[in-house]
Image (cartoon, rainbow, N blue to C red; front, side):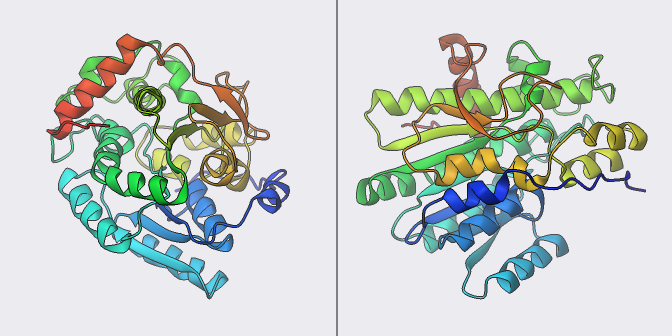
Length: 337
């Protein structure tokens, strides 16, 4: 049984959406658009006139969400792309399809999809299911479609790589190598305590720290090349989405606790303000982190998404090198900027 969801009205979304410019002529790829912040972002981008590639695992949910998007906007240029982030082979197939769909380049890749506090199990590639879904497959996808981003930047002035982190990055102090290696199923077990070092949540925190560190890596490498590609990251605060329902279903959170916790949160629309800033706001600077504050739990859970600097806990040479080198090793390819 799902937990009792709170009915949380949006406070900031409509005014923010009304401030965004047209996205006519732009092509945007977003992972994880069946619900939550990814669905909100896809819907907003379509309304603003963009071509949107919807990267999801094949499922009835992804088909239903596509139908909803097209029903709400009959002129929507929405293109479903099968992409299972738990499989590198699936990501490679998705990248090939993206090239076919984007002969004129790709303006934005939004690495939004994620899972939270799942059991300690490996993917078919041998990595932790959370780390591969949330970071490693996004690293691979970004690498594979990077030439499309370069093409868009050269012809239309800029392109953007958008990653989606979380306040959970604050739950771990440092990025640790073991979580980026083929150790799936051997990373601490299934402890589910969010506040007392439960292994599920440590693994999740590592993935969200990796999302931020990936952005720091990209930003530093891109500015050193005077690239017109921008690297940006966001977090949704405590946002009411299907992520919590999935976590409850697989034992990562209790129903009663989740219901009480989410009463303090914000709507999926307001939670999407961070990635929408990164995707669509004009004149954003590379290396910015958008979200409702930069603290941890209970201090950055809701509110307007403002732009902040990247944090030194991951934007430092040691962490950037660790993240980049082990991610390249994981996907079996060098990622040359």
